[in-house]
Image (cartoon, rainbow, N blue to C red; front, side, top):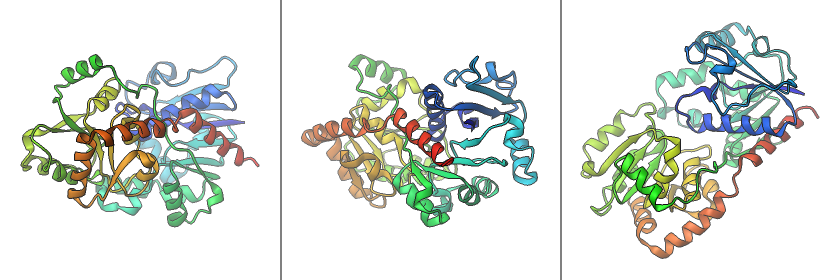
Length: 382
């Protein structure tokens, strides 16, 4: 069986959780060799318009002599391709990528095809909480016809049991058409040597004692609530917010500027992948009080590095961290602050959370994710 994989998400220069999921699963699926794959992507950037062999990221599987892996790059604007998919229904995916038996979308995206397809759904926050999204992003989700895309799929993959439940409730898809394949922890996320932590701290001018948040800077992540909780922390602590600018973030930066602790709040921006493990490991605690997550990978990465985590009890986060994190009400900065103090200063609690965190993080591997995705592929042909 040959499967076309929409690999456009892997071309993002700063990979978020969705793009990382796409890149890592594609690499594992190709390495397992149980199906033939055609990896397809497109774009008009000169970085990618030079052809498949030169334009793909280094971690994308290369084409093989036995044709088990093909790589097809369409040097055409994604805006044009998406418009054709959405409004004309052609050219179809297989017109660009070649003949196949099945298509796989690692994330919701524009699609026109006559092939049966499998799609991974990372979350339905754009339906649950549309107020957290900019008009542009709401329009994007409208034009990809997300609910129709999910309902018409031969099979759906959810990244968590919570997302599976959302798909059932919102889209009316029966449970027997949904598989669960959570993301995983990269091997780079592990305890770090003191000298590596010191090197990265110096490279990024990080404070000696800090609470850490990693993720997009956007309202859904409840960063304003995090800032309110941090204002109750002792003076020796700083707050480091590491992540790219999401949408509708103006209120977050304004809240930080007027904070009583504004001199101790640092927006680091997008952290380089090679430094993130040491940034996690150097933190007193990792705090992630998000209102809604389809899974929530940063807390699991922090646990793998040996850092105690404080997370919201909302949506899938309790599922992601199990008994290895302190769960808080995201609407109550006081309880968030209490948990931050415990995670940073209660040595007994820190030791317990660290040990449990290692065990919980070890449950999530990309090999297991790829195996579950392959099972979903097989179920479409039965």
